[in-house]
Image (cartoon, rainbow, N blue to C red):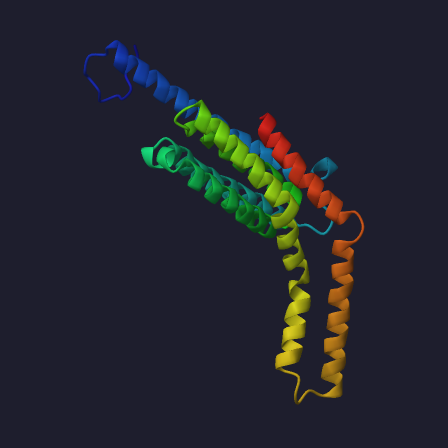
Length: 238
C-alpha cells in the first residue's frame, strides 16, 4: 500500500492501510466540499447574461458579497463540525433532551442572525437547511431506539411551539421595534422641541407605520411561513 507520509518508513499492516485510506477519503471529501461551496456561491450570487454585473452593482461589490457569503458558510460549517463531534460524547448522550432544546433555541437565533447578516432570505436558506440537517443528525447519538423516538417527539413538539408561538412573537417584536423606539423617545425626550422637530418626528413615525403595514399585510407574512416550512422539509428529506 501507499504510505500516509513521505517520512514514514514503518511497515504497513492492514490497520495502517485502512487508516491511510480513510484519511485520503476524508481529504478528498474536504476538497469536494470546498469546491461545492465555491460553485454554490457563484450560482446563488450570479452575474447577468454576457458576464456583466447586476444593475447598480460593481465588480468589487459582487466579489465582496460572494466573499462574505463564502466566509459565513465556512464559519457555520466549522461550528457544525464541533457540534457533530460533541454529539458523540457521553456528556451529550447523558443530557440528550437538554441539549436538544438548547440547539433548537440556538437554531432560531441563528435564523434571525443569518437573515439579518445576509440581508436576503434566499442566501440564508442553504445555510439554514444545513443547520436543520445537523440538528436532525445529532439525534442519532441517543443510547437506544426509545430515546431516539422520544427525542423525535420532542423535536416535533418544539417545531409546533416555534411555528405557532415563537416565530410569530419574534417577527412581531422585530417589526414593531422601530415604532416602540420612536414612542419611547417621544415619551422620554419630548420637552424643549421646536415645532419643526415635532413635525419631523411625526413624519418619521408615519413612515415607520407605513413600513410596518407593508411588512404585516399582503403576501410577505405568507412567504416567510412558506420559507420556514420549505427549509424544514428540505432538511428532513436530505
